[in-house]
Length: 183
Image (cartoon, rainbow, N blue to C red; front, top):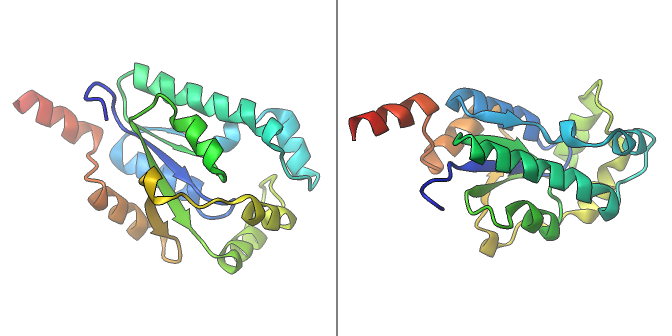
């Protein structure tokens, strides 16, 4: 990672794996910038999914590019950040990480039954549980050469966030600033 580029955590996994919950808790705990992938979807993508139709690669490219632009903007501000994205396929993750060595990949591992229960219990979200199988059909779990941090999501979100902070040696914005002042 380049020393002048603060880390950006890319929290990935299928819909319902807990990306929004984990990502927002992690960013809040650290005082880092946060962006939720769904906010980058064009309205046409949301309408398509809400109607029960899976997205194609062509639907996803502008969405992924918008997330990439957010990563670039956070880096330009000199702030660490957390952004979520299903990033189901290797090619999607490669696109988000291209030229961005500060991006660290966090993969939320979840089995189909756990995710199905979560999606069924979730209300007010445009992604219908009927599309779950398309998520798992498209899923290419990160390979070892992508250096992912794999986190099983069977437990409650707060312990997962604490494990991530410890495992990745993450610091709150204030702690990082205090450390710089002392040096």
